[in-house]
Image (cartoon, rainbow, N blue to C red):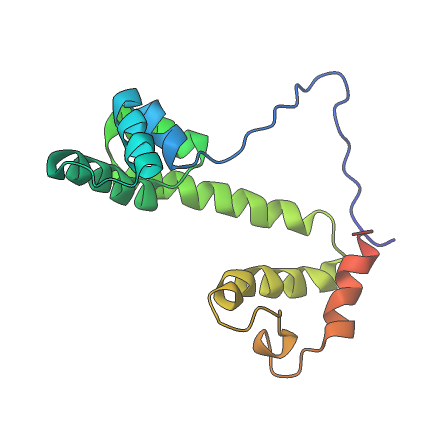
Length: 154
């Protein structure tokens, strides 16, 4: 197949499923159960929040936008309130994902996979909801790019 082979240490790894925290879980991580309750109550009753609570909720929301929902980032932000540290952790996580992608491709396909990955968020922000391969690279076409993923069995 031309791919590097990687072994998996069966029986030596505990697999955990972690999902990003949403804003509510982010608030709960800060021990803000009362604020979560007030936001829910105001939403359900369609009533405005008192200004002080709204300001507090908005402040947490802005922090959430910067920190995101990755558990390690949230944990470190709560402990340090250091956005620079959080950005470093986010970069390390992203780099790990990118490096992991390369393990499953042929050498000549790694660049294509990376180009597709880098373009997903750019294209999701556009009105056209269809992924356009020509936006990755002017001569890119679906059959050539999709062949990378069909080889992976996805």
